[in-house]
Image (cartoon, rainbow, N blue to C red; front, side, top):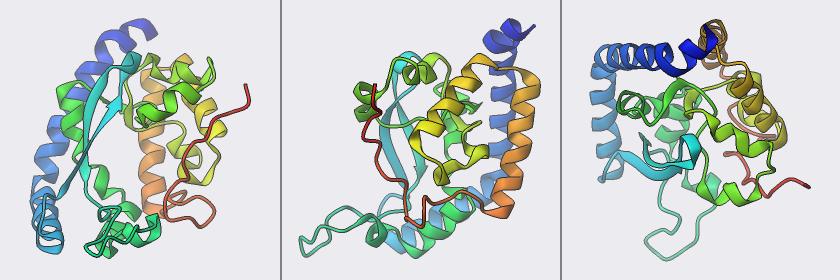
Length: 205
């Protein structure tokens, strides 16, 4: 049954939930697009190539929450300086993740799975950590409901691999339920007071 869910049923649920989510949230999506465009005077979307299942590249889409790394005067900005007030609010409520429903509908992502990170991290993974790419990346995951950005990278990857080995309908349902609680409580958004999660520098192998 788990094999059937993992290879067939899970995708069907992803399609249904992403379509429902896009339709229900469409008024909010339109409002956020307008607010972000008025605030930044440029595209409200952040697009970046990320590794998906089996490291296959895809273009992730999120609402833009940060300014360019260099300002108009040529000054290099820190991560804290780059996050806009509106972007900080979107991150606290996880509203910046909403456009990823289109990634789910397209088939690049799932509702539940390890978060899609950067291609730069792949050479830094241990063999075990690399297993997180055996399933599609997700909007939320086991690592997100167990600390999100407040835990270390190594702890995150352990949770990701645990999910890979235990994918099931009940487990996904549990993660979705816990995600709503985490969003409401705004837990685990930052790491030790940092504005964003520090870059992964590798694990001693």
